[in-house]
Amino acid sequence: MACPQFGLTFDIGRGPVDFIEIPLILLTHGHLDHASGIPYYFSQRNLRKLLPGKLFCPPEIAEPLQRMLAVWSEIEDYEIQGSIEGVDYSRDYPLKGNVFFRAIRSVHRIASNGYLLFEKTKRLKEEFKSLSGPQIARLKQERTDLFHEFDLPLITFSGDTKIEFVLDNPLVQQSKILFLECTYIDDKRPVERARMWGHTHLLEIAAHAEAFRSIEQLFLIHFSPRYRPSDVRAALRQLLPDWLADRTVPVLPRD
Ligand SMILES: [Zn+2]
Ligand SMILES: [Zn+2]
Image (cartoon, rainbow, N blue to C red):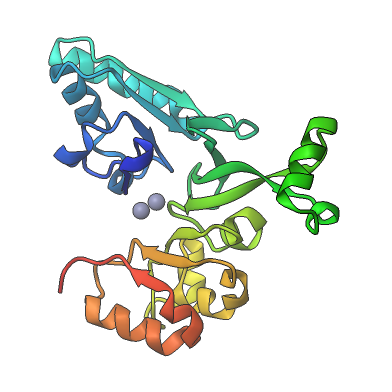
């Protein structure tokens, strides 16, 4: 899922040609439907004389991915340049202006991250809100505690995860935009089975709808290919409360 305004992509999939120009990959986990394009991406950036690509991932897979790139350098008989780094969960990484990203651990079958893009911003404290513009300007000369600083979550990308990624993280619930995996939509694949494989079921999103109250737009991704797009759209309307269905967009192949 490319996010060109911040020069990054969440995962790389099989490595679409359009993504090669993007300098940064935030990799959620190592399953091949999310990660198989990595060597092609790095190699193509070298061939096109672009700056070496950069990738962040769960710490457990940084070294195996570096080894994979070294093996592919051997196969290509050419030293593929690129940086692969395990992410530090306690760090906010600068992206652009006041916008940063942070990795949040998700809950899948293997080591996995979601990523939060947020703006470090500040808001006038309650006690100063009744003052006029000129009064505030004057006070600003005298004191530095007029504003309180906070993180405004803009976009969260879940990767593959159980629904706990949403339920356990208030910042995820406050994101303006949330990309959330929703692999299964009906009883043929029941909730328990989805959870066993570290995935989210539409019935769980419906059952926890209140956790999505503050989200302005919910993009659901990663539907199982067994479903027809028309079935997915019908299930969203049927299972989600109207207010949530109205702000939910399924990301689907064209039907
Ligand atoms: Zn996966
Ligand atoms: Zn997947």
